[in-house]
Length: 252
Image (cartoon, rainbow, N blue to C red; front, top):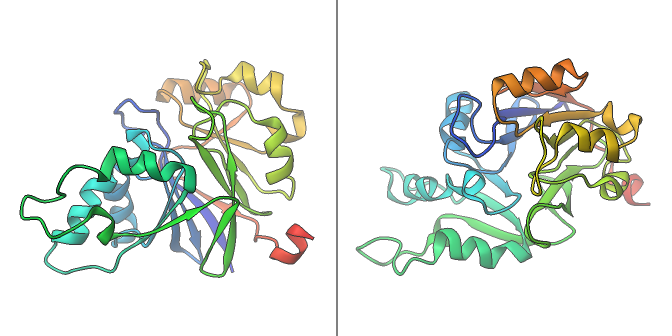
């Protein structure tokens, strides 16, 4: 089997040609798992794959990462053809936040008779989750309050941080088996996001050389980070991945 990571968008919360940050894990050229669902994620996904997402992982509930779920609900529930509910995976601690942000309005539709989660197959997780015969590790990141943001990894294949400050101790565990590390970064960091100086200070050289940076503020920021010697993802880029390790050897 061949695995790849395709970036749908690589930008920050501001609306730009970079798109809101989201990515798709592909297996043998077919979409397997969409990571995050901001306002423009589903249109970008459908332009490439000609279908709606069948599985989604949510890193955290800021609107540039979940704002596409409401229009996706409308497409699923009120379209001409009733579509099967996509799997939606999220850490258990995010479920109340996700409910409050997108699903708690009194009446999803004026006509009544439907709940937001009727259109999705919601699976809370903690350490990770199974999907299509693969175990995905889930790990805490540092973005605003503790317990509100989580990355995802396929052992030996890839690690995706979601929005985060540096997490050197965590990556030493979840990314130790290899593969690229897709990491939140822009030129200048802040209390919620990583900057170039943070990478140099917090990560050893053998980790920095595996980083694939995304969630930057502009095309110029991306060019500046490339000039500093880092690999920077661009919208639409498809990155080949090493195959994941079997679960027994990854956890033994």
